[in-house]
Length: 238
Image 1 (spheres, rainbow, N blue to C red):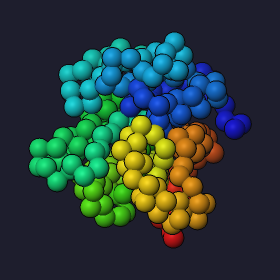
Image 2 (cartoon, rainbow, N blue to C red):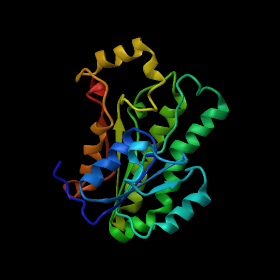
Image 3 (tube, helix red, strand yellow):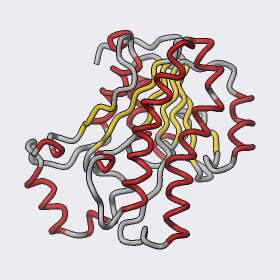
Image 4 (cartoon, rainbow, N blue to C red):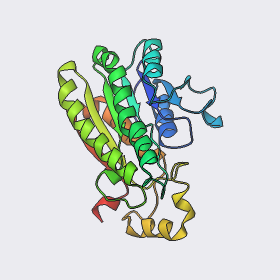
């Protein structure tokens, strides 16, 4: 990848485990950016310790988010990737509400807290949506609903913040091999069905998402805002 982010400050929210957030953080670091990551865990995945400044923050805690924003002096790119799901458990109303609070409200809380930072830099906000924004999901109804709302929020913020010079876009990953998808991958029939429907005939890897994030944050995408780009191996068109 030939993108150059030297001198740029990037914050990746929801990157404490091995997954999409971590892969995006590594991609920006390899492209020369100063990258910090957040997560709800006490520490990030072992492979990331010492590589990135780490901020433990709960995206449902508005005060903690405000405090984090106060500690970050400048920011060019914000990646909003904090999310939870639990296959087969989301019909419970209390858990449904928790998923929406993290995935949707948490995304907005982080965006709003760093709005001024991004406006000063003419920066880029990238939300991580999901292909489930377009599909019904009997096992993950809260996740699907929240990610559909993230896609719509992306469009609304793109319009609202365009006068501030901020571009707002989203990425909609398909089935990716991450810690979050581990539970669903215990079902061999599900794993096989995904690969069979996907034109590229495999599950994605976290690194498959990183290139799109680099592109959307770069000058190559300077006339793109409000978009939600699917990165799913063709699953959504099959």
